[in-house]
Amino acid sequence: MELLSNTAVLLGKELRTEFRSRELLTTTVVFVLLIFMLFSITFHPTTSESQQFGPGLLWVAFLFAASLMLQPCFLREQTNDTLSALRLSVGDPFAIFFAKLTANTFFLLLMELLMLPFFAGFFNVHILSVLPQLFLVLFLGSLGIAIPGTAFSAISAQARMRELMLPLLLLPVLTPILIATTDVTAGLLGAEPSLNFAGLGIMIGFDVVFLTALWLFGEYLLEE
Amino acid sequence: MVKSIFKATILFVLIAVTAYLAFYYAPIEKSMGVIQKIFYLHIASAFSAFVAFGICFYANLRYVFTRRPKSDWLGVSAAEVGLAFISVVLITGPIWAHPVWGIYWTWDARLTLTFVLGLLYVSYLLLRSMIEEPDKRALLSALFGIFAFLDVPLVYFSIRWWRTQHPQPVILGGPGSGLEPRMRISYLLMWGALTGLLILLLNARYKLEALRASVEQLRREAEVR
Image (tube, rainbow over all chains, first blue to last red; front, side):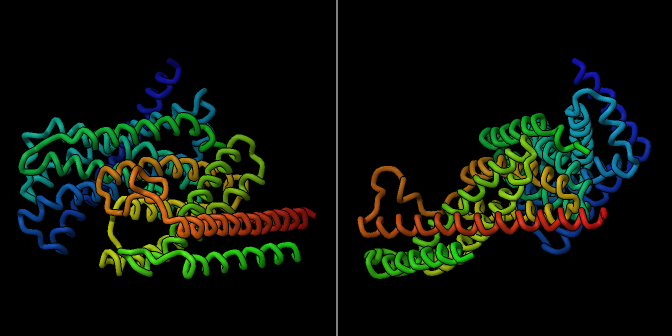
């Protein structure tokens, strides 16, 4: 119970910090729009090609945007020297991770939902009929990015070249989630939309494994 | 020093004998021809690499719970040696694939897994080089190593579900698999030789890391005075 109430307070703090400046959302939204444009310029896709490569493009864009978005998560605490205070304020350090990863999942999901209409418009993809299923994929995918992302953000914040380190640590680990989300999204956006349960299973498995690992090892990540 | 030169010489002779057996004693494979000989090195190296990464994971876990620098030394040694073996796998694979498949590389399940595995441990070593403070470096890299190792089965299952082109296991596979006896002997010897090489390299690298740590220690003491 204490974990949940602590998490709620910390989550409130994360959301307030972001919605005061809206830095993360505005920068990542612009970044994803840029990737959409660069893809169209460099590949000149026809309508059928953009439908074929769309899911991959969508998730690569989200993945890169996420590796930017997760950057300040612990770096902000580091530069403001608030990490020790944060650690002292809660009993279980997992509450810090739980709050941060919930906030990150929420921001990612919000950014993704904002970008979906643009994606559908730019690449002639029909998303309205599969919107609930797509939301499920986006949620599980964002959670899968946010869990190791939050953990590695705590690691990279303590290293040199931290801006380069986070994508380097994060992207290879996210291979399974990228494979699963892209494939399931492709199934939903294809000519005969269908939900691939094996892919969903991989996403859920990934989320569970890394959430458990974070719960077990999270406290060591914040040691001084 | 003399002892390790002696051990290295024995191992060199063993590898040379095994290579001779693989080329001249084991028969030439029917469908692939002489290019199949590279398997002796390819598979044994892959095995050594996986063993090394397993050792790295064990050392990482041990470091997190015991905080003994020795576990950290073992972790970095195993990761580096594992990377050396996985490089052999990633080089010999395409050499075999080009004449047999007609292409150097394909993003098939096991190939992608090996590639991702290599990248994960490159990241592990890069991370270590980016943290100055020894205790912090040991702890954070051990934690990343644990996360990375947990990722391996997930990568494997996701890619296997995605696509598979790699030849199915012949040695411990299902019915219909199996090796000609002379081939089996050559494989087993190569396995033994490369496991020996793994132990030798691991031992040498571990000693080097221990020396580095004591140099660091001495330097600090000198600075304090």
